[in-house]
Length: 321
Image 1 (cartoon, rainbow, N blue to C red):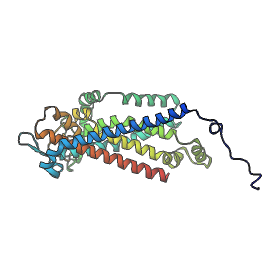
Image 2 (image 1 turned 120 degrees about the vertical axis):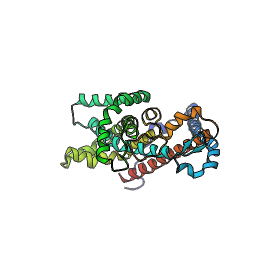
Image 3 (image 1 turned 180 degrees about the vertical axis):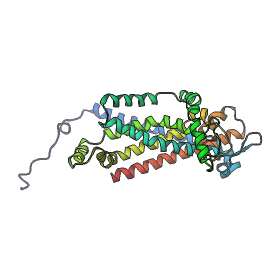
Image 4 (image 1 turned 135 degrees about the vertical axis):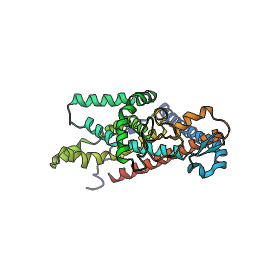
């Protein structure tokens, strides 16, 4: 085809019409407004970070990195260490994800796929949404009076069978790390389920039909096609749930035991950074305030590290799938 007979490029009506000055002004105003709002978020975040750093300077200068490796917390003698709280934060958050991810992902698959009748799937989805609406203090009370007494015989069985290991060598007598892990499972489960459900619903129908067209089974399509297509969004939801678990305060404070004696045992009372801040900040004075701000700075760094890692993982999975 010669150049003379080449058809003109397609131009839509929006490009051809002349935009009035008022419309351009609205676009510019909206652009500037979004920039201002985004800048406010960044400034607030930076301000919080600077305030925490400024408040923790005294403790950083006195305790240094020993604050991370010692568990002594003695306000009388001004000796402070956050090892117990750091260990409790990481262990409770990670173990809760180990339990909640299979449950949440399985629930999301149950809701999105035609495995059960529609009424049952809608009922399960409604219950998940209602679970997310329960206040954390109510979950804490439920954990104290219902969950912990109910699971204590099971925890005692773990102590009897696996008491030779350092992770189960404590006799369970009430609040402890294990009940805190389970209450965190209840709290992060709706997040993982909701985000996984939305990710699975966004998988193009052509992928599902193509998988069934080549003769694969339902579970083969789910495991080989649907889950890989949604894995980046699901991973982002899991990392969001991890951040929620690391920063959860009230329910964990009520059930973890708030002890400063370091122990590897999941059956012994423990502590987390968020619970420690909630318990002590109101009555702290002197260098104890700076020590608590130092612990808050550690929690912020851990949260930022989780978010950065989540962004990297999501980008890698998006490129792969």
